[in-house]
Image (cartoon, rainbow, N blue to C red):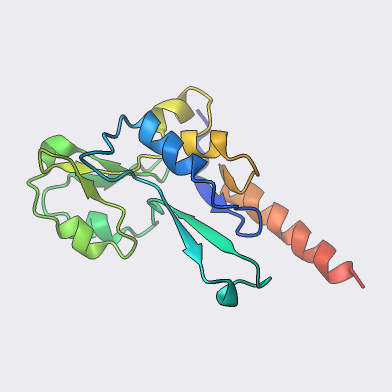
Length: 168
């Protein structure tokens, strides 16, 4: 497995709000939609606030923050950072259901199952360990959602910015 830290990237100009990423996440994680909310949500962004003025959408899941407030807020160690991948991992067996992590997370990523234990996006760790992309990324029909090393994504974005500056 690649030891470089991987990150999710969303290109707001490409996201069409189809919810395929949210559906794939629910399927991958066996989410019972009648009982619980999935790990990924898609929200419309007011077109007055988008750069182009066109309808825009924001696909949101756990951001796997480098200095994750949910990890800091968890009193039992049920949430940890994987030092190799950078992913924020949940250990439901250590969770006491206090919701401290949910109160600390500014993005609403921690979820709780019917048993009151923590459940959250794990970045499709098993898929990634087996050379596959996370389910949400795999199904994105426009390529708006990506999963790559931070270095690769930065290089690509620098290239786009440079090309944009060259346009008349």
